Length: 313
Image (tube, rainbow, N blue to C red; front, side, top):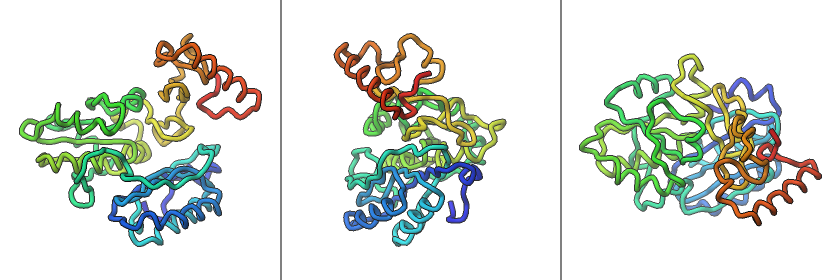
């Protein structure tokens, strides 16, 4: 995305949400932290950014002017000149604070020697994605985690049933074979996990490996709903919880006991109690924890500071 291009909804709502990443050799990443923290604070931009020797990753939110200032600063760093950014908008600030953290990986796979700067799969633009996944020889894999896939995915996509991205390499070893799966297409929320996933498959000898440029978010922004092969909503890592076609905010809320997104239907389920438990975890939480969560919920309600994830249906 160029500096000049912004989704049309960003100017209509007060808060711009920018998901960004860049895989690049960054041996001096620790030195970049202070200036990035300063520009976030100066422009009242909140969210979280990760810095590692392999690049930058994160999601931030603020005013149009504030986001522009932060992106201008980041792009002034030579390694981030080609920063990958996807924007959407929401009515309220989805983050409570800003932070810049130093990490070993900007997306944790836990496999040494995987370098998307050296080898990745073939990028496929959103407008060409439907044709690719319609090919019967293509194996389509959702690289996200179980709780994300539970609320939406592409038609025909395989669910690896992972609880974290660290488990994905094991799924590949158990279920994929370069001699059998000749064409593999993968996708994730914004594209970053697919960068590493395709690099992993290339390392393991897979020849035709494809991934969705810009991830699900870019597809939902770009492809008309009438032509879409996406079913459901897309989980996002902020207090919006989910977005749909056109990147409109979804109706899911977050269960703060287990972290799973809760649909509008499940919010009416007798096993859902806002801030305490949901149908996914009601039988997994002790009575003591339920009591403590209920007290916390009552305190938040009294103070009138409930985030979306705690809102009553």
